[in-house]
Amino acid sequence: MTTDSTAAGAALPAGPPLTARQEARRRRILHTSAELAGRGGFDAVQMREVAEASDVALGTLYRYFPSKVHLLVATMQDQLQHLHATLRKRPPTEPEPGARVAQTLMRAFRALQREPQLADAMVRALTFADRSVSPEVDTVSRLTTAIILDAMGLDGAPTPEQLSAVRVIEHTWHSALITWLSGRASIAQVKIDIETVCRLIDLTAPAPRA
Image 1 (cartoon, rainbow, N blue to C red):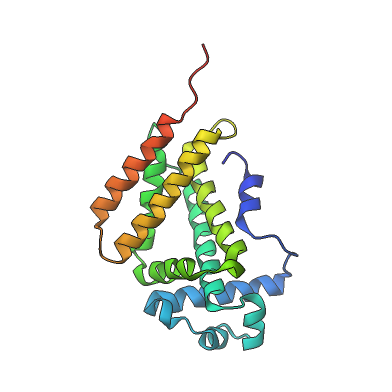
Image 2 (cartoon, rainbow, N blue to C red):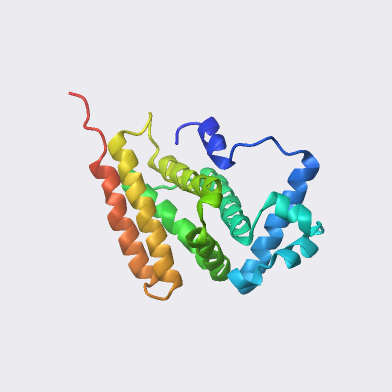
C-alpha cells in the first residue's frame, strides 16, 4: 500500500455515507458485538442481546446487519481497521520486505491471541459467510492486503507476481489462524509457517535495473 487514499478506499464497502448519529450507532453495535464475542465466542453473539446492549431497536440492528454473520464479519473489518492504524503508527523494523510482512502478521496474530474467543467468532463468521456477505468479506480481504502491502514498503505499485505472493500469504495466514484456533497448531508452528511463506515476497521482488 502506498497511499492513504487507497487504504481508505479499502476500509469500507461502497454505500451512502452515514450521518454522525448513524456512525455512532454503528460503532456501539460493533463494540457490543466484540464484547459479547470476546466473552463467549460465536454462540454468545445473539442479535436481540446485541440490540438491547447497544440501545437500538432490533429492526434497526437488522437494517445495519442482516444477520449475525454479517455483524461478525463487520466486526472483523473494524478490528482490522484499528490494527492497520496501529501498525502505521508503529511500522515493522526488519530490513527485508518479507521479514517485515512476517513481523507484521505475527503482531496481528498476537493481538488475536489475546482475544481467542473473539478471534474464533470472527473466523467462524468468515467460514459461514455466503454470497450475501461477499461485500463485507471482500473488504476484510482488501484490508488484509493493505496491511501486507504497507509492511512491504513498496516505492510503487506491486507487480502481478507480488500480488500473487500476497494472496498466497493471505491464504496461509487464514489457514494458520484456523489451525491454531482448533488446537492443531502451536504459536511456534504458526510463526514458522508465516515466516516461510513471507519469503515469497523477497523472491518476487523486481530485479534491479542494470
